[in-house]
Image (tube, rainbow, N blue to C red):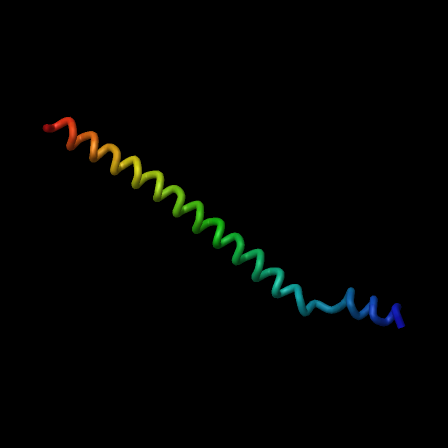
Length: 58
Protein backbone atom coordinates (compact mmCIF):
# COMPACT_ATOMS: atom_id res chain seq x y z
CA UNK A 1 0.00 0.00 0.00
CA UNK A 2 2.73 2.49 0.85
CA UNK A 3 4.65 1.64 -2.31
CA UNK A 4 1.65 2.51 -4.53
CA UNK A 5 1.01 5.78 -2.71
CA UNK A 6 4.67 6.80 -2.92
CA UNK A 7 4.96 6.06 -6.65
CA UNK A 8 1.74 8.01 -7.39
CA UNK A 9 2.95 10.91 -5.24
CA UNK A 10 6.30 11.11 -7.03
CA UNK A 11 4.85 10.90 -10.56
CA UNK A 12 1.96 13.36 -10.19
CA UNK A 13 2.57 16.88 -11.50
CA UNK A 14 -0.61 18.64 -10.33
CA UNK A 15 1.14 21.08 -8.01
CA UNK A 16 3.98 21.96 -10.38
CA UNK A 17 1.96 24.66 -12.15
CA UNK A 18 1.05 26.24 -8.83
CA UNK A 19 4.71 26.43 -7.82
CA UNK A 20 5.55 28.07 -11.15
CA UNK A 21 2.87 30.72 -10.64
CA UNK A 22 4.02 31.40 -7.07
CA UNK A 23 7.61 31.90 -8.20
CA UNK A 24 6.55 34.08 -11.15
CA UNK A 25 4.27 36.21 -8.96
CA UNK A 26 6.99 36.63 -6.33
CA UNK A 27 9.41 37.80 -9.02
CA UNK A 28 6.93 40.32 -10.40
CA UNK A 29 6.15 41.67 -6.93
CA UNK A 30 9.86 41.97 -6.22
CA UNK A 31 10.46 43.92 -9.42
CA UNK A 32 7.52 46.22 -8.67
CA UNK A 33 8.83 46.92 -5.17
CA UNK A 34 12.28 47.67 -6.54
CA UNK A 35 10.83 50.05 -9.15
CA UNK A 36 8.72 51.78 -6.48
CA UNK A 37 11.80 52.15 -4.27
CA UNK A 38 13.82 53.71 -7.10
CA UNK A 39 11.02 56.12 -8.00
CA UNK A 40 10.58 57.10 -4.35
CA UNK A 41 14.28 57.89 -3.97
CA UNK A 42 14.35 59.93 -7.18
CA UNK A 43 11.22 61.84 -6.21
CA UNK A 44 12.61 62.72 -2.79
CA UNK A 45 15.88 63.91 -4.34
CA UNK A 46 14.01 66.02 -6.90
CA UNK A 47 11.80 67.53 -4.21
CA UNK A 48 14.84 68.36 -2.11
CA UNK A 49 16.62 69.94 -5.07
CA UNK A 50 13.52 71.96 -5.93
CA UNK A 51 13.15 73.15 -2.34
CA UNK A 52 16.81 74.15 -2.23
CA UNK A 53 16.51 76.06 -5.51
CA UNK A 54 13.43 77.91 -4.35
CA UNK A 55 14.98 78.74 -0.97
CA UNK A 56 18.20 80.05 -2.56
CA UNK A 57 16.34 82.36 -5.01
CA UNK A 58 14.70 84.39 -2.27
